[in-house]
Length: 301
Image (cartoon, rainbow, N blue to C red):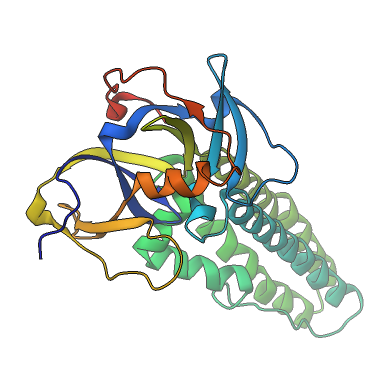
């Protein structure tokens, strides 16, 4: 079914692993969030990220995630960082508990199978689910490599429990302790370094990208996770979506990506501008010109 949404060139970007697009006609430029100074005024709606200074111009910024009812980048990042910190502490505690079981001559009751600890279950799912891995790493090769490097030290740490049990069973408690100490200095140290590197890369990747948008007399920034490409959709590539029963219809249509066939939600930038700039929650700058839009695909994110 053909859509009333206009055909033409669209900027495709990601939010929480899903793909969205805006008409390139409205995109003025892309600016990495790390390159701007952002302040958040008091008592603004959740969808307002703040005010960014972009080349001496103050531009109001919305978080498109929050605008569309998703957790903000900040909230999602904090949850992942907290999870990684907890999984790191789990393995520090695991080795301490193994050591205590030897010292106190009692049974070790924590998981010895690397696939059964909390991290192992999450890790196995992440590596086996391509979409989940893509969303987590944002397809970043450095972060993907760090994820892969967890496998060997993680398996080796859990394997130590059986080796320690054998030493204790042979009455070689000192050798069991030496094995634990060596594991702390090698496999556990490697795991701690990987957790730290993973958190650092994750924070860097989740700083987001500002899409500076012009619509009629409004100029504002829309915070997105990352930008994929600029592509052309023909009218026959675009379908309408069912009318929403409540709230503003911020998604005007859907299109199918040429690669992989995944659906891309096409945003109605006019509706977004009306919701965010028309309520007083966001201070939108007046557009000074309708200059030719720079090619977003060439702007580094």
